[in-house]
Image 1 (cartoon, rainbow, N blue to C red):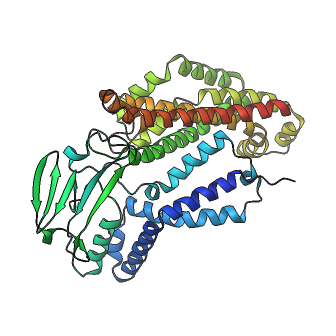
Image 2 (image 1 turned 30 degrees about the horizontal axis):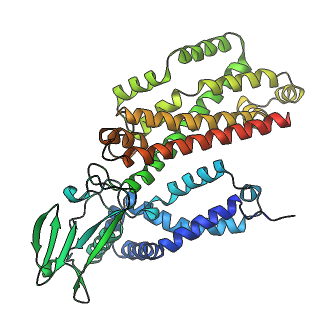
Image 3 (image 1 turned 60 degrees about the vertical axis):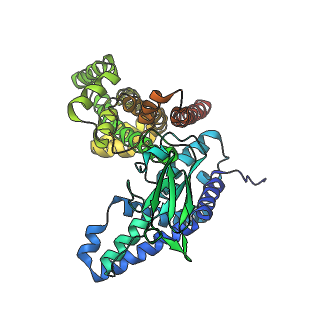
Amino acid sequence: MKRNYFSTGNFVLSLSLLLLILRYDFVLQIYSLLFEWCSLLLSDLLNALNIIDFAIADHFVSALLIIIIPLLVISLRAKKIFTEPLSYPYTIMISLIFVFLFAPLITKVHPEFQKNINVTKLLPPLSSVKVVHLNDEGKSKPYIRFQLQKNKIIPGSFNENVLFADSTKTGDDVVYYQRGDEFLISKKRVASIDGKPLITSKLFLLGSDEFGRDTFSRLVYGARISLTVGFGSVVVAFIIGSLLGFIAGYSGRWIDTMLSRLTEMFLTVPSIFFVILILALFGNKVFTVILVLGISGWMSLFKIVRGEIISIKKKDFFISAVMIGLKRRDLFLKEILPVIIVPVVVNLIFQFGNVVLAESAISFLGLGTGTEYPSWGSMIDSGRNYLSEAWWLIMFPGASLFAVIFAVNSAGRKISSSINLLK
């Protein structure tokens, strides 16, 4: 049997190895920060618990997973899921999950970081600027040491110890230029290595936006929002649609009629209007967006589950299960769900693509996940004001959105075709 080297398992291993090579030093820094926090946990429990936040935990988890996931893939590489031939849908979906898990390692820039906007505003892709690093004097207490180390490793939305400049000159003092203006700063204020001022370059791989924020970083963290909202909304739609479909199909009579009319009522109202109304009334937090998109997308699943239940409850195995006294919960989980899981999964895959597109649409309208989190839709919205001078603000999030939706729909069609062939 010919071995398939372009399998999903090998692709995961390749991505993990590539990221580990590119971010080897950064991963080691995160591990040193983790050990520092563990020592602080032993010496000062209260401060150690208070100082931990989502950003720190996010980096810790990513640094651990970059080692754990390749080991799991190697140990389970004989499983069918890791031996599947690599295709376009698998490539995009694996990449999306990879970005979701390892966003802090893929980009070391906070998606909302902005500094010296007059230098960093609307830079085209592959632009670079000079970075002047300033001294950061700290104290020797463990709590302060951890804070200082954390500030150097974990990116924030602002950093007072760096300056961005178009160019620099070093003499008795450091001279830097910002849009033609000349500024002078003492060498004592600038951090140094071996007596030389620490001046580096920062590359904006995909350019910057109108506030000087890194487009690549925002694109990476925007993928997290798309996956979180998509998966969360699909779970909500699955719970509502499958439960109501089971109740309607199993109970029949007036309950079936009532739930069917309720479903038709939801279908008559365009979902986008319903979503906009609820978000305008109750706010646009991430949880609210997930809940609203889930509630607006359960109707198709209801019809699938209801139709399958009506067919299944006439089968001998189901009648036997009812006669031996199985509870409704056990009937659904043990007798019905294994039978209907395939068409349900296909529906949920298509639903995921619809939700990702809907989230981008409402973000484009300013009703998405808010300004706290970057979103592909909000990036496209901000970019439409700069079409003539900053084409990259729309091109990259738009291309990412197209690639994900096309991959999800391709995967759904592929699974649906496989099911039809089996029938």
